[in-house]
Length: 112
Image 1 (cartoon, rainbow, N blue to C red):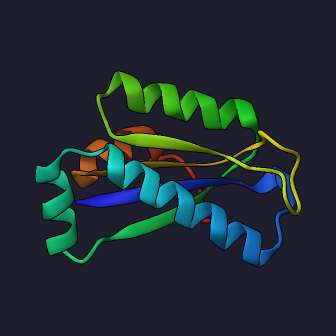
Image 2: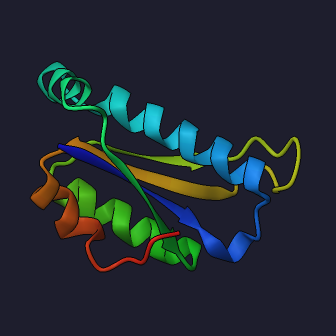
């Protein structure tokens, strides 16, 4: 079981902003998962990987693939209080789900 969080590298987010967006995405996708996957992921140590997308279009294409695959996922849209414009899609989380299922969506991406 794992979760992949994909953050947009093209936005130039500072380290703190990036960390916050990744955390938001992780929690939102966890809440989208069923209780069976939530429990299994928690019991196995909550494995996560943070990956890089280079555009909003790429982020949405990955989200669509996660949806097609039936995986829990969530896109973060920033509130606009600090670095980003309101509504900016900054990150996507896929999973928690089986490693191979998450890799179908995010396996070609580079680490952030």
